[in-house]
Length: 509
Image (tube, rainbow, N blue to C red; front, side):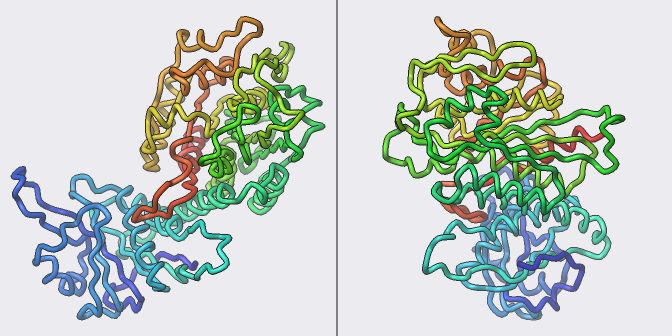
């Protein structure tokens, strides 16, 4: 899809669909007060074309509410779509992202090939353009890759339109939005793949291809490297599958980077890449197991974030470590009651881990990934994983869980997700939770029982970050969209890509 930003009279936009944003300007506290929809454009031709229908009261400008006008008078566009942002006081760039996505999703089933979306007046031009660009590209993704009767419903062109005075500012935001949305869609493509296609080896190949394309350094290892590094926790999961594991390492170095003189932070991104999770010997129920192809969504988020970082070019070094394997129940698979030993931490021996449940495999691969990232020199860490069903029970499919051992680092993350509009909720850590994963026969055990499962999983990971400032993202409830929304298709969400990339930028020196 061709995507561009222009400044041009709206009346002359000869497109299949011209989309305009509107807000409800009603400020009365009277519950019976009628909405007052107002278009967020000063274009007189558009105002005139929509005046009568806005006055009719049938359109209330609710969030993502749409109203279509055919052959609007005085406009070259064949259709005019009015998209609501909700109450004016609550309209933000995040509302614009959803509105732009809604316009695209409106076009697709109607095979409308070209869209013009007008950036609303009254909002920051940079933020609105960035959000609209993200919304347009994210909405164009559909998960029906393998359907033999797949229809071409894609847009051919999407044009964002702004006023001349804001063009330069909006252009900068637009370019960032394209970088971020393309990276998020890259992650969504990987999560959407069936597990017989996206094995750990193929994930490594795709990571390498992406890295080469955007200018990242890359290395992809397999079983031999795990044995060399004594990654016993990672290997305990990987050994139960005929498919070999992949240890993926991507490195971004800022322009002019000199290893001898660089004294800035090194940010480490660690992703869980279980390309299919049966649960192992502690096998999952059959119902819904097909979704376990998305158990590598944390890895996909980190790879997508690295693609975005390469495009945004922050002045900070970043290292990404992805630990990818299948969790399968064959004769070589690890068992409940086994003891696994994690990667040595420098001169310290690895931690002994009592295996209680083989379906708690993600924390095992992340344990070695976090240790390795620190050994590669990372001074700050973030990991992402579809780690626990307990987090979904706690937060539903509205917020992803977030944990941190450092308040200042988490404040940076808060600033990042407030900018991207993604939703995270911080959950606690504490010694009382760690006590639940103490083992009688080993250093720790890989589950702490039913209660506080998301927290005890985070406490497990915390063991392997030592004193390094760290954030853990449990994205189990947010990585897959169960039902289509007005602005985005059902299927893989690519959650956390934009926020992780934005968080990395806060470390720029």
